[in-house]
Image 1 (cartoon, rainbow, N blue to C red):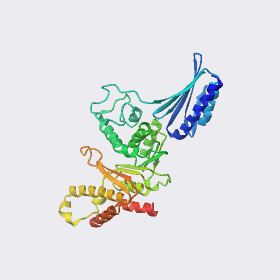
Image 2 (cartoon, helix red, strand yellow):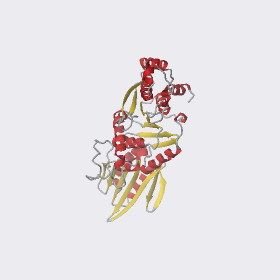
Image 3 (cartoon, rainbow, N blue to C red):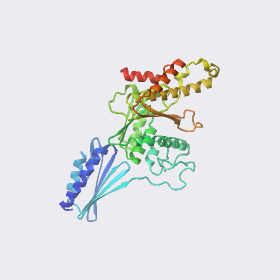
Image 4 (cartoon, one colour):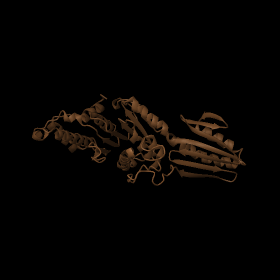
Length: 390
């Protein structure tokens, strides 16, 4: 290749450097193929810290991404042609250069399509996270077998997590903007839903996002880190700690909490409200706190039946959570997450920040708190966040 063509290649590389700087957390690698006559000479790079580990001619060097491109540009002078393949999660850029021209094409990456009959006929949803495109993800979280089939005993889980994405997608997509959307998963467990959301937002919606997973259990955090390493999802971090000890000053845009037990849900909601999170989502689990503390004389004849008292406690707990979120400046909806035939703990609380505090909701919450003789943990935690005890 002549110098005019390698100079032109350099202009393309300037754009590639800008892209790498913006999307380094989803950068997968670079492959270069030099051609001289019938011979081909290959090099490849993988992420390494803030730069890359570039292997060419049997030697691996750690270097910055711009320095690697300078090496490729200089080396191209020795050959007839060069193909440079730059890959991000879900996207590949292919730059072809020879003695006549330099061109670039963009490819959307998809996994091998599953042949008819490979999956169960029970898979009848119009999936957002498609098994034909998300095989690496679905295998890593145990939904899909190694041979590319959805496991029969995981169909229900697959439907649940895809429906979770469906319920959240419209709101999360509205957060798409310049900069990175930070999503915190409180009580993340093995983080399956965060991995699925990460895939969907990054590779389908093309959003810049960063996930923070927090859980008290070191074992489940290690399991999450193992899946993260397998998938190469570098826009995630995991911490074995109590959320009340999370002191990071970064802006948190979204707070998620799935099946956190009892008052752990309240702590997650209070954390999100205290941080002015744009969107808070919780699927509560058990509701033990109010069941053991609340009294209401007019309902005495009803509450003597334990099962009715428990169901009323569940309703009051989530209803008060909704009112207190409204009081803090959120628009709240409470919907069925999945069928009650699968689990009675099937409500999802969704709160979108408006910034306009609702005095009427605050008064209504206060009235209920007095009437039932309770003081919800949501309010305790929120006061602690506001006044510095957490």
